Length: 284
Image (cartoon, rainbow, N blue to C red; front, side):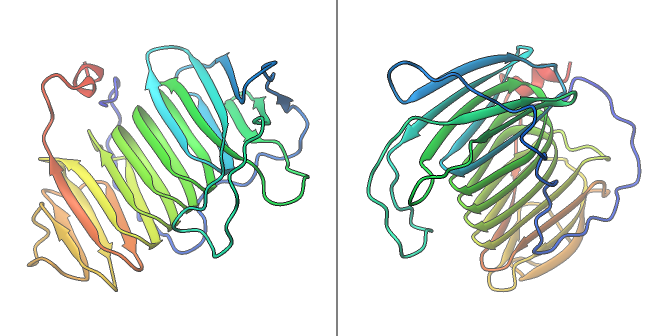
């Protein structure tokens, strides 16, 4: 997904990260939140909201997968579905029987965009599992995407992505812009296209592998660390691969890329642009 505007080049800033979460604080008090209308029957809710291109969207989900996909509309469509709770491989020793209930979702519209979250769960046991499918304008800032247990998939957007997953996998495809992602237990497979000077990529995983896919010909300054695994790269970083840690340049350098897999492997993969890919049209 190529950005349809030119950015001003600048010196890539030094990116610092650690175990602490990189996501912005909780949006605040309950004032301004409204509950999404429930259907008379069924366990799925739908709502479409006007949303300006380039706006900010935040989403919090305790349990359940989240799929965010771009489209060529100035609106956000939210589909939330309650699903049967099943123990995930990464979860703790506790197991939960399958159960479903109506999704209980609330939203808050702000000057910058939209906040989405599950209402506070007050019943016994754990909150119900809710699966989200969200369509957003192709140009969007995805900040404060938080998932406790569940996978996150993002595709066909450009702008900014800030995500935090305690237990779950991150999959990003046909994306352009900056990425800041923290994963507790889970895999990361992230494709970043049309990487520009002012962009930055920071991905850390406590337990799990990281795969970063970049276009051939990309320039960047890379720092990758896999103390209990190995780092491999299709790009020449100036050292013989595999290694456990590396600091080097891709091409003539450029934006900062920092990858850390505390207990896993890191792979940097070169991808080729397909002639019919949607991202090619977005750059014109």
